[in-house]
Image 1 (cartoon, one colour):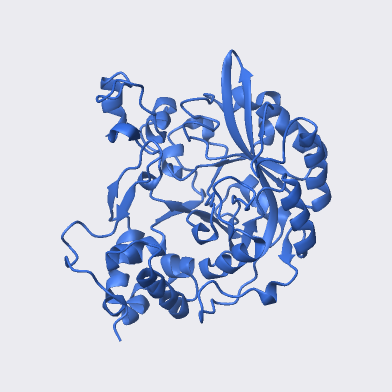
Image 2 (spheres, one colour):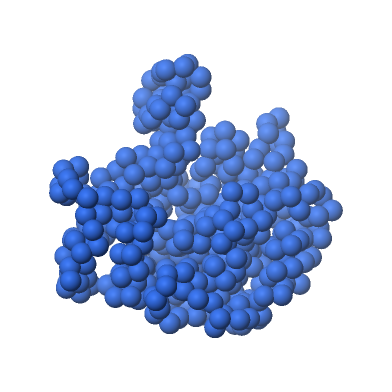
Length: 430
């Protein structure tokens, strides 16, 4: 079966997360996005774990459906997305903060388990170690290697994925608190790691500059804190519609079962370049090195970003892919693209009206962005077809993000579009 999965999300119990990130809210937006499997997020939080047990029921092996899924309305009034199954897969993110080799390490890890009982066993072990109540993404003084051991002992069929592996502050390879190799972090259990989450600020081509990552699948997820952000990164599957087939597709890392990933253009990620946001200083790695990693305005250390950190560990000048490696498809989220065409913010009423029209015409966001023929799009909107065509071939204009500030990716150069405010009829002519 061909399907799309977004396996890293957060519940309303995580900090800075929308109250709309209920199971019903996630399901409703997954339908609009064209996503078939959604990570539950936060199964370690007792209240959310209770909600998962009450509101979900087993479906395909290791996957769950919402008990009253037929009662969930569309988030956009009057818009019925293309019918497709939406399932949940039990997931959680744990923030491990601990000392190793004389340094404080801060690594985020994703946990995936196939059933409620396994999640409960993991929770009991983690609850005995630290506070799993105060945040949906618990912060524990637990070594990443020991977290992996707990998962293997309590959920033998589960798996662990290092989260957003290049993010400066909280990741496996983070410039501020990470490691230089997988083995240094996970020690004797490193062989149980088979996938890495690239994060919004990197893509597979960047990761394939590092030979130490050759054996790992490069996976992508939204890490969304509100359901409308689902699918900004995601994974494409052509395999059985169940937990074990999904896991084994990552393990195999071949295009026939794991065709690829949906990606941000990495420059849009908020830690792609180096910089100091307080001083509005954005630097490429060469300039950062020339300045000795000091902000040219205030003299304080800049935040060394993902691009810089990848280059520091790279031992190749060009990416190396196996012949059957999964592909990746860099996209601009549809609301952002429509916002550019209208000259308005992505959450404004005019943009959402155009978004609703697009879903009604083309079935789902990812179907439109990835697969719908351009000539078919052009019959309804020549301007949108031109924008999507440019995005698909990477002919975009990039302003890199840095030090927590998202970058900006545009399909049109400044001055290409008329300098007047546009309306829905300019995008979808009557």
